[in-house]
Image (cartoon, rainbow, N blue to C red; front, side, top):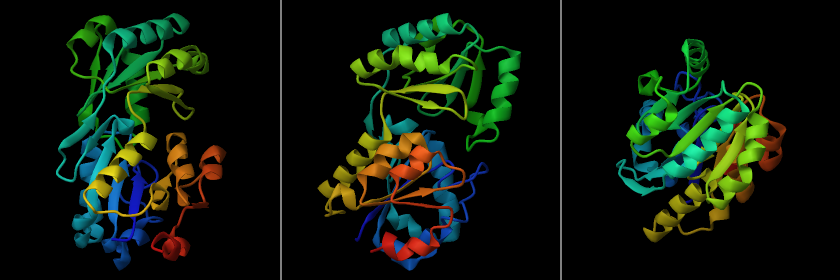
Amino acid sequence: MNKVLAFDVDGTLSDVYSNIQPGVQPVFLDNRVLKNKIIFATGNTITTIKTMRQNLLKLNPKLNKCFSYSACLGGSIIYDNLDNIVFQKFLCRKKLVKYLDRCVKLDPQCFFMFMLEDRQVFAHTNDEFKSYIVSKFGKMNMDQNEMSFNDEDYHTLLKKLPRIYTVNIFSVNNFMQMYNDLLADVKQAKYFTYIDFRWNMVQISSGNKYNAVRYMVKKLKEQNLYNKDIKDIVYFGDGENDIDCLKMCNFSIARGSDLPQKVVDAATVYAEDVTPYLNKIFK
């Protein structure tokens, strides 16, 4: 095997309908891809990965032997190629309640999305927020069958939910203040946080993509399926949570349209269509 190809999913690999983006299809249609291992890193659940694999196999049925590890929920859960969990880390409920209490104090109208292993639970919402969520997330690569709403007080709800890996906090006006207020405590707890300006959102996660990609590559090396350095993988991403992975590689691609400048600067190249770089990818 030559390399490991690592892909962010939403925007980079797929569109909002889970179709494989035309600009990245040439990678999977090139026969050289069959000598490589493919890993995924997404903020969504394993359901998203399963859909991506199905759509990729429609492009090239031989890709099945290339699929390997998948990091979901921003790296909080990692699965092997049979979708068995090989790593997981979840958020402490007591700490999470304290974080959310501070957010509500800053913005009583903020609302939350708790990421569980196989679904997303929205809390602290009302009918207006529900309409907003459905309209926004309907434009993302997210299976709405995985979405549920709960009007219970979030203190009560958190006691009932199974393990929580990530929480997304939405605030129209105060998300920057929330981020700055929480940053030090989140880091001290060895969690990860970042801002998504597209959604007025602060995310607190038990894992991150950078650590997840390093873990997946380490596992491949332990199985003698990869014998090069972590820097020799090729990473494809389009978001701010991909920046560390893009910087880590000797060759990385910021793939998509209208990407944040930070993301473009972190990658080796910026391309909507990766065709001109196929030789570099498979070198």
